[in-house]
Length: 263
Image (cartoon, rainbow, N blue to C red; front, side, top):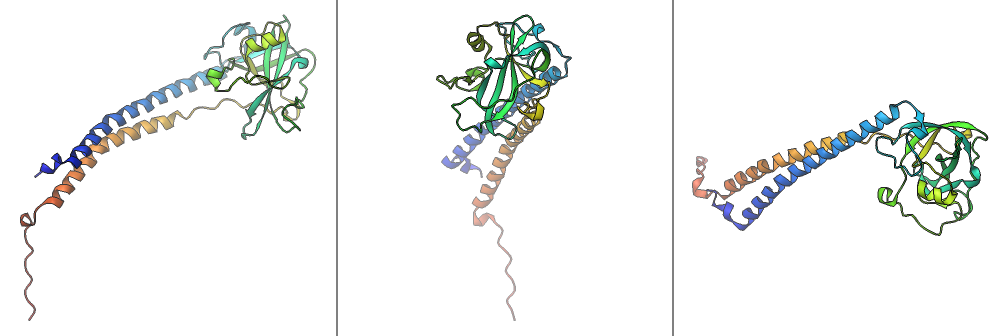
C-alpha cells in the first residue's frame, strides 16, 4: 500500500523533511540564545542607568578601556569646556534619522586631565561639509557636567571606517587615544554623552537614552521555529495519506449502487 514511498519523488521529499526538522530545531535554539543575550544586555543597561552618579575618575583614567558593566553609568565631572579644540563627528544621525554631526568638546578637569564630552547632534545644513559647521557654544567658566559613560569607538565595533584626509576639526570616530595624540594631553578613556546641563534652545540636540532591545521578538521566533519543526512530520503524513487515497485502484473502491431506471 505504501510502496510509492520508495519512488524517487517521495524519497527526496522524505529526506527534505528529515533535514528540515533538526534545522528548524537548531534555529529555534539560536533564537532562544539571542533572546537570552538581549535580555542580559537590557538588564545591564537598566542597571547602569539606574545606578547613582559617580565621579568620572572613579570609572576611567587615561588609556583605560570602558567595560560593558561601566557603559551607560552616570558620571559627573568638574572643570571647563575647551572650545578651541572642539571637533565634530561626521555622518551621525538624530532620532529622525537625519544626517549631521555630533559635537565633541574637550572638558578640562581641575587636575588637568581631559574628558571627551559628546554635547549632542547638529544638522549638516552648512554651505559645505568641508567647512567647520556653526556650533552653539557651551557654558563658560567652571561648571559641573553629568553624562553617560561610553567606550571608545572603533571600526571593528561600530563598522564606521576611520577615513583619513578629512577637513580640519572633523573626525569619524570618538576615540580617546586618537584625541590624546591630537590634544597632546592626558585624555580619560572613553567619552561621556552629556545630559546636564541642558543646551539652551535644545541645540545641540540631546542624544536620547538607549532603548531596550526587543528580546521578546526572539523568544517568539524560537517558539515559531519549534512549531514549524513539529508541523513538518504532520504535513508529511497528511501528504502520504492523500497520495495513498489517490493511488487506490478502482476495483478497491466499492462501486456505486445503480439507480433504478425511470418509468
